[in-house]
Length: 463
Image 1 (tube, rainbow, N blue to C red):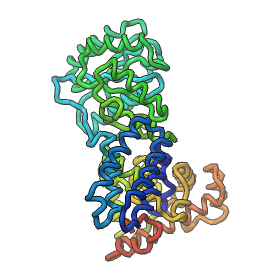
Image 2: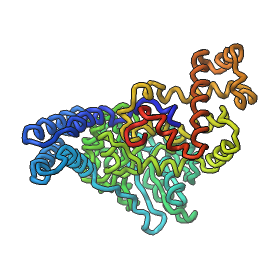
Image 3: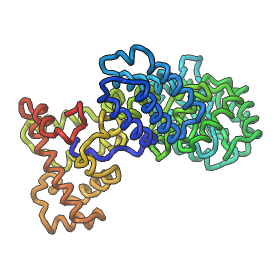
Image 4: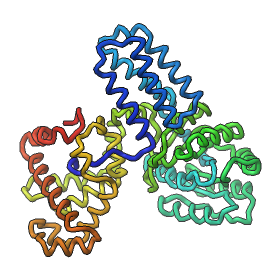
């Protein structure tokens, strides 16, 4: 898939990652650390954190703690002091975001009630759908959902549609009902249906107000949920930390779901919410699809922020989302000497989209930021659907035998897919590159040779 790898992701940590990665690069070559270059480094880190919208008190605490450790004897006397200081910054980031992943408590008497709170537009309803899917597929739990948002009929309908998509039981509610009555009825229904988990959606407002708080406090008292999760939009910056604090004062929150982390936010919300509320971030919403939810691992996120990738998450994702049967089928086909055609390429592209697209893969690959411009210039996530559209415009014969695609066919394919002839030419070239690459892989010792031939197009450590 490497020939299709494209530019780095547009995730909320990009700016912070770029700033801190360059600081880390400067440090790598330092033969020894002095108080002066430690001060310079921490000044860069401080500026990067503030620009990423991390709350000032949080930054102050971070820098003070890092400075104390950096001026300790073990760093100054270390054989590679630059690496030692990088480790300190990494460890402080991990600590700031919560040290370790904190999973949901699902061992209570079923149905385990999970109450979802948050402002309007933060992504509560979508997060419930994602969480339902995650509970069913990853935890093997049966799930029921209910909406107590009686102010927006669209909210109830949206939850019903999403519940059907993710295979959760939808418990109906009406705008004429009182939220407390809806909640009581939902618990009874979930018990009758022997559901493991009941997810409860609540009403949000555009900003924190007394009426909303009183209603959710009353719901909390009636439901006595095992988990009370606060959903916050990571793109709301400092407001995210402030609203989290307000909800945390009114409710005994057990955790946070940070949404829209694939957006162009500055990342400070993730670093501030944990410190300000003292509550763990349990999940990240990484896109619009109901599969786009991942458990929050502070150590893995810190690694991504510092440009060191996140291989553990990448491997987990490949295991969960790559169709193993399809992969084995392709391997058998290639071993028989039959070339890699457009049917195979389309299958690979669809699997990549399933894993969050190229952007989703890039920030998990160590050193992706250091890729050659050549590799990065191959496009971005918008090009993948375009490539699939071009393949869809081909006849079955053309997909199987790409060599037959000459000028008139190229024009027809471009017209049918709403693209240019040069786009078709580019795709033909990429298919040819992959065909050659796959040939090398199937030969004895081919993987090693293929890796050598791609040096410079892959990040250090993978080539």
